Length: 348
Image (cartoon, rainbow, N blue to C red):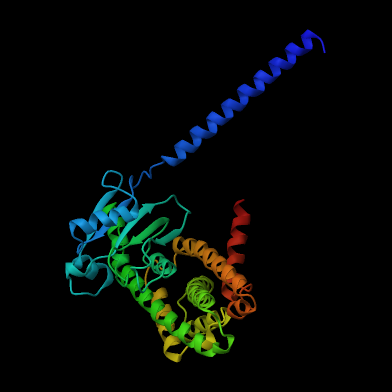
């Protein structure tokens, strides 16, 4: 190889090296920019502390969230907020312990919930918060829940609503109160399902770890059932231009329970609670609008992935929990998907 060729090769290597360094620098700058993106509607995340917390407990709660007073906005949820948003309670500030940190996300991100202190939130799971939040009109947010003392967790939704309103986003009180009824109903019915399923499947002799996975799978199936009920009600209304009849609602509820393999574990009282809830969904403005349905689509994906994972871990018993109908959409949901695909095709 002559000197001229060597020089050309050397120049080429220099150019390649320069390009590589430029690309690395660009990627680092983009990553840094992404890490420091601030939501322009809210700015900093908002922490809403329970009014019952003393100064020491407030500091401990902020530590649980991994933040300090400089990098979040802070507000307080009190007893009056509980009555306003949830429609019940004495208004006593001394019962408000659970706290939340709410980060507003870009459109399309959906709802994410993480309980940072599961040992202290004794009644409500992270997934059980998600459906009610969408019912209340909350969208595209990451919500972290924490408490430094043991609490049931029902009042955590109050903090989320307070955070949204503190940032200029109005929360509809009718939807918020229906969301609380949904949370209470979900918790009650899921406990009933788990109890009945455990009794009926006693011969499976599950160990403690597998029983906990089975319980989580049943609760998630109920959460997905509520998503399905909302989707079916919205599709039926779109098809016939009016609200579903009581018979329609009962059919939608029972079909969804059968689809997600829960019918055998439901009492008549459980079913009636879901029918009553479903009737209120379609009579409360906004609950079945397109924005809420878009949030529910993302939620459905999350629930199905959870059940798939748990079912795989439980083997043959997991198949029994999952049922045989999970791959089939309801009639009205199929119709709704067809309508959406038709109009998307027109404009694409």
